[in-house]
Every structure is written in structure tokens, then in C-alpha cells.
Image (spheres, rainbow, N blue to C red):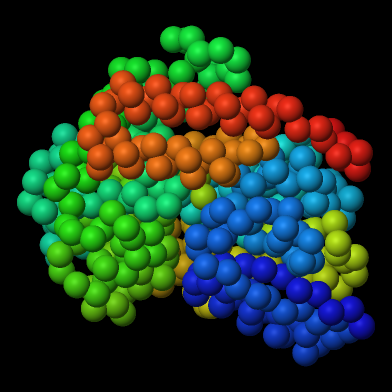
Length: 391
């Protein structure tokens, strides 16, 4: 018998289905699996190489992959599963949920849970969803609107607004000396995105700037002073029809297009693990159609399979969550995944918060953001890949 340990994040969406499935896996033998949990903030920022040294399975977010590959702490999935299975899972995943775990030509995590930034609305407080940013700003003047700014989310909100305005954040930025052509965000788009975020923050209910996505959604479902968040990671657990104050999730405000930054989670296998056939079969089952459309939703999970998102029964039981957000996740933006990206994301979010809450000018904020990005990219480029890593 082999005892495996995994690490996931401490929210019903992140733990309930995995713990229930692990209990059944352990009862049926021959191996056992136990899941530990960490807070959302740890999930977003903990060094991946430290976690991989302690756990066999890791539920992770794709921006950690650059650091994971530099540390050579994950097993590429083509060493564990045949290519036809990996291709089928990738083709069947909603949006870029699977492709976000593809780096250096190899897949590093199985797409378990799919999520992206969407708009969250209390329909009883805000009957009509804003169609564009001008509508959202008009609504914000009534005091019921807040942006997501805590932790890394100020930066992610800025990026999604910029994507909606037609930008591709970081696409042309170079780790060398600064030039006008390689800014993280083009000056005109970046300034407009910062203006939008600052206006939303200025009119937001007191105390919302410190709340992570879960905190914002908890506030929406526990009181009546927050009726709309234009960009927040979608959580199906807050759209259940039985909730007294339920949230309706839908497309965020659009400009040139709807902008959103992909999130969600994948399951990775650490280098310390020695997976058995039984464990690999368990991972296969978690990605199976019956688990994705049945077991996961029944245990407050949020599936990654497009077939589950398109299932009318799954959508009805989720209060229309999947139908309302499908188009947004299919076009979501994928963050950079270079080594050192996660610390950059934290630093960048602090810079953005200074800009929208502290009065730093857009020009200064964009310059600081570009400089931080160039430094992070240069430092990441200097990391020497481990000998065990192959392209």
C-alpha cells in the first residue's frame, strides 16, 4: 500500500470534491490519498518548489509553471499518460483551461477546475448588467460597485480591462532596456484602464478593497451594500438557486471585446511522488465525463470539461452559472508563465493599488509596472534549467 498526500486550497470548490473522492479511493484500496488545504492567498503565492518537496499531488494555478520548470519539481504528464489521453483532455477542456498548463512543449497539470474573471451581480439590486465600461462607471456612482483589488487581483483586474480595450499585456515587452515599444501596457490603453479601475475604486463601498474574490462574493451574499463586481473570479457556489441572496454571473463589461484573465486549477504530480497505477486511474476518473458532470458539481466543484459546462442539468442546478459565463471563458487571456512571474504579479498588484488608491499618476504607475516586468523577465531568463528538465 502507498500513502499519497495532496495539497489543495481551502474553499468548498477547492476541497470538497477532492476529499470525497479521496475517501472513496482510500476505502477501495490498495492505496490511500489524503488532501491538506491552504488558504487562497497561499495558493496564489506560495513557492511551488517548497510545496512540491512536501506533497505528491499539487492543485496549482498555471502562473507557477515557470518556477516549477526552473526548479524541476514536477513530472511532465507525458511520462505518466499516453498522448491520446492528454490530447482528449486538452481538446475537451473549456477555454484555455488545459492549454495554460502547456509550457515548453509539454503538459504539466491536468485541467481539474475551470474559472475566469466574470461579472458578479445581485439581480435584485442591479436589474440590468452593464454592457460596457461607461455603463459600469455610471452604475458605480450609486455606491453598489466594487473592483477586485486585494492580493494579486488589482493587477489582474487591470490586465483584463486592458484586454477588453484591445491590448495584449506584456506581449511586446522585452527584458532589456526600456523603450516606448516594449511597455507592459501601451500608454494610451494602460492609462484608460487605470482611470477605469481608479473610478471604480473611488466609489466602492468601504472595506471592499481588502477583500479577495471569496470575500467579495461572501459580502454580496450576506448583505445588501454590494450589488456588482465587474471582474471577479467566478465561483459556482455563490449562484445556487437556493441562496437567499444569490449571485448572477455573466460577461464583464466590454469595449473592443470582453476582457478576462483565465484562472482555475490543475492537478500536478511532484517529482517526489511515485505514482501507482491506482493513483493514475483515480486522476483519470476525476477528468472523466461522469465525474466532471456528476461527482464534482454534486460536491460543490467547478468542472473543466466543456461537456459539463454545456450540460443543461448541470447549468440549471448552478443557477445558469455555466451558460452565463461560457463565452467569456472561451476567450480568456492567459497570463505569462516565466520563472519569477508569481513574485512579479504580487509586486505589480501593489504598484497598481498605489496607482488607483494612492493617487500615483497613470504615467508613473505604467513606468513602474514596465520596470518591474523587465526586471522580473531578466531575472527569470538568467535561471538555469535543471538537468532533469527536457524541452
